[in-house]
Amino acid sequence: MPPRFDAGPGMSDTSNTFKKAPKRKAAKGKSISVSPEMRQAYADLIQERAEKQEAYGRHLPQDETRRK
Image 1 (cartoon, helix red, strand yellow):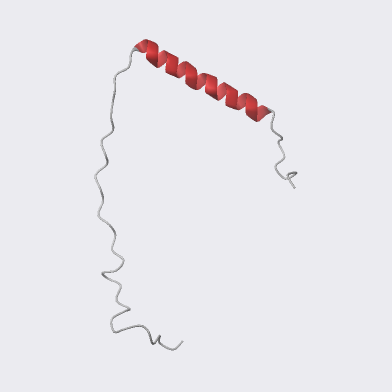
Image 2 (cartoon, helix red, strand yellow; image 1 turned 30 degrees about the vertical axis):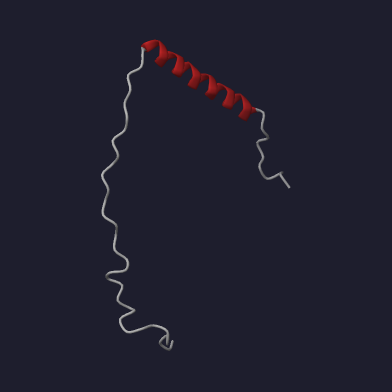
């Protein structure tokens, strides 16, 4: 393969071009305190959502290949 004419001198040197970015420190997450009642209500909400999703998925067709 002939050399490219638009490539200037030193264009094949990629030591500076493709350097890895330095690692960033992980952002510190926020933490809040919640009452036990609130925690239980949130757990119930998650459970209810999971049950709805499971019931919805039960009625979907199982064969994805028939969709044409």
